[in-house]
Amino acid sequence: MSKLQVRAFLYQLGCFAILFISARYLVERYTELIGFWIPLTAFVVGTLLSPKFQAVKTKDGEKLYMKWIFTKGVKEIG
Picture (cartoon, rainbow, N blue to C red):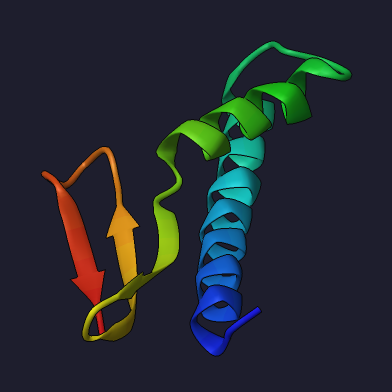
């Protein structure tokens, strides 16, 4: 694994974790769901809303890209 692939994995994991914890809190606090449904709902929400990061080898070298449902197209990240 290259340095950018590890960075992409950590970015994706961090974004998912933030969204999962936030969604879990909101679902537990503001819905009537109980038991296994709380983390399952938070997982689905976190998976759908989390941005996707990927390291791609191009002719100019390896670059990090992000795709998210709230932005149009694919964005290059430093």
